[in-house]
Image 1 (cartoon, rainbow, N blue to C red):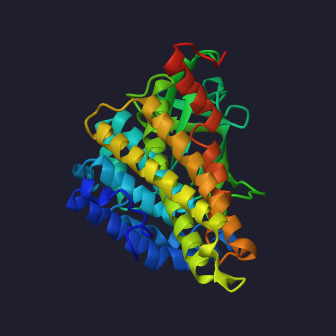
Image 2: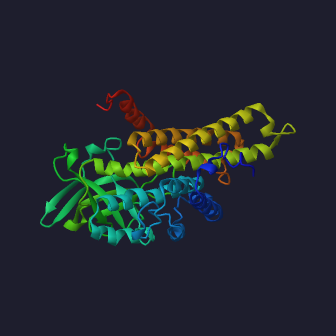
Image 3: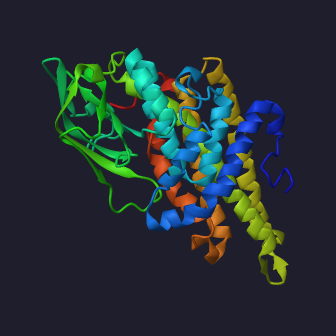
Length: 394
């Protein structure tokens, strides 16, 4: 395969270190050898390939950019991004699983947890011996998490939690949930705190979300908490206000920006291969101007997104990245990937609706990615405020 087919039109490899390329190539080989052969059947069966979790742990995927003292790989941010890119080249649901485990469960424990919480949970989560989920979104409060109604009330030395959460990745698989709840008045977003809630506790229930048409190989659940009692030491002591869960979401959005590039890469490579091998009117599809322009547009937008991610990663490594820069990358790259997946599916013609091809699966998955972790439009408003200094949320 030429480097153009391999999507390195601007020689991005030359900007990566040997270690960064090694991480990418290791995960790429695993996706090709272990994930792609089974993901189509998992998607049709609406089943997350849980049997692959130990292999992901062995590869060091979980908490890959977190400190080595907790059993994590301690990769730099670009290597972590490339890892997410390759996982989503396989499937958005698998990248989502790893992203939640790493950015939305392990990161808040590291950032806001006590030493005891870190020592207990992080090594287990890194080894895949425990699975976590992140409970922020509620049935009536998606883009406005400050409106959450889940409450945590003091009860002696512990807390009692009541409420519900919606669209929770890994919810039915999880051993522990990071649940965000208000400890004060419901109109006070500053009272939001994080709690470690073991899913075996009485009153905790996770129910599979039925009727999905996207992310079919991903576990998505609704969480119900009815008088769930947790000890005082389950409070994440460093969590304070809505800023805490939003910091977690920034970590996840960073990975999504890279992951979307991987999905787009998969669709482009599939479309290019098909266009060169499929013959119509005694000519390969790739010889027609319309299809060439489609492929050129795909490659152009992917290349731009690759460079955007690389600079974002370098900024993050320097501690200089802003949440608005992450918003721009998430917004741009997911929108780009949606367009690439749709055009690839169309180029594939009737074959594009078959599960043996990947573009339609990516196309459907990306519709969820377009919405979660901040919708495309909400990120637009975040950027609009950064540009104009005028908030448009109220």
